[in-house]
Image 1: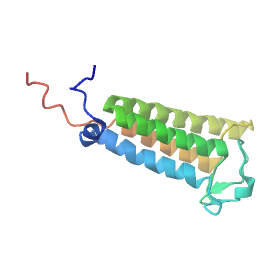
Image 2: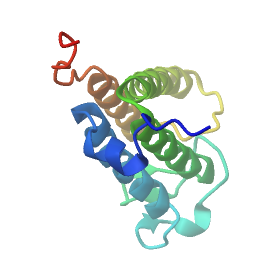
Image 3: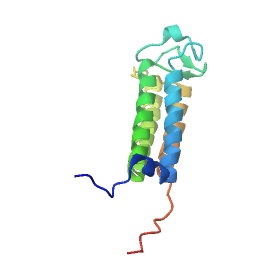
Image 4: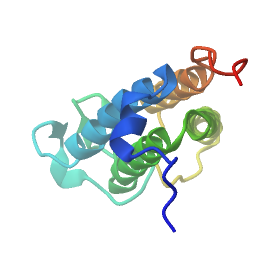
Length: 156
């Protein structure tokens, strides 16, 4: 039996909360960054792109160290954020907060490993650690965005 009260996908997009709209933009930016990491010229030293590793010489925009794993993770983050934004504001917030904390943890882990010289599955260096820290704080902060109060709550 079909639920006639369930909004269609196009209706859900029309009634998206600010956090869902912002998350869609963030997902697009992360997807673009993930794709650009696979494009020679935009990624300098593309021939040195490795699957994993701390000492990669492949640099997105000549600045941010990237590996195949790093690019794929960016694409997966983008897909997860976009999927959550299509579902609900609560799912969007939880996803943004969770990925924000994950990125802050990656920055902290990167700082520890750069200092003590261990290997990682994603690049770690000063620029990459700052990238993860800024991205983590941004995602976490976006997860805290409050939407407009539901005006229909008091009406019955």
